[in-house]
Image (tube, rainbow, N blue to C red):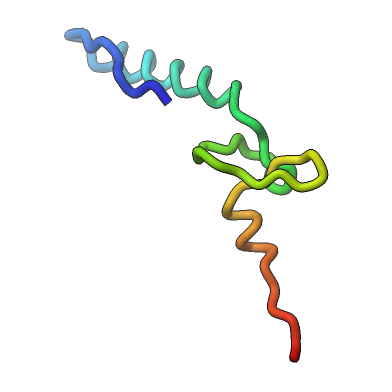
Length: 66
């Protein structure tokens, strides 16, 4: 994600411009098939052609009995 942006003497403008850029970046990210959120990490899991975020994969983890 591109974090660098030009700052002005108007902090409110800078905030909204940064927010707009982040929203635009999120629109281009793959969406987790489980939680429906854009995946912001550098990696994701692809299972049967669908993306899953690290959080959802960990939440789905289960231990098998012996």
